Image (cartoon, rainbow, N blue to C red):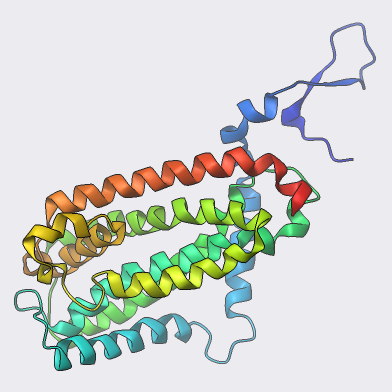
Length: 289
């Protein structure tokens, strides 16, 4: 039997030195501290997922470059050439689209990885105690690495179009964090449901496919009529994508602040909901997985 020291305490003086007493509720009280104590497990799981992603692949990390780039080309042709939707200011349409593809790809990849993480680590979860929150968070590291690789394409495109970013580029990490948090809340909720109801794994591909077309990835959110724009921002990715475009394109893509704040509130709400639902059902994972 594996005993976790955080759940046990030494017996009072006078009893045998080897005797341990289980202290009820100690795991619950120390849960967030245990996240730090098990940080090495987090690093091990994250590194394992990264190595598995690129091991025995023909073109390796180029997958992280090709997927957003080819999607950008398709969207540029459809929305920019055929539909003739406007760009932002004097920014090339290809830059507009790719600046929207970056946060969307980060969100979609992180959501997909987190949502199936518990099922993919069933053997580990059923055998040893650790805060289960580590598993879905660790899987999101792979999506973040893909995102960093995709940034190289963005740098190359800006050099090709001779488009220099302004000071707002310094805030790009903030919007990257927003994209990860936007995926973490729903990802935690769905992965908890997926343990008990396995058919929830079919929900994610549908959500990702549907969300790609209702989010302002291939077009600017400014094309939405003003009277609907605040309502449109109920989609939390609207604020994330608008923030990305503003940080990369600067004044060419101003932020619609009421909608951005609404998207931020929606992200916070789903993050709270995801964590609370995950924690509520976490104790039963090992029994039913």
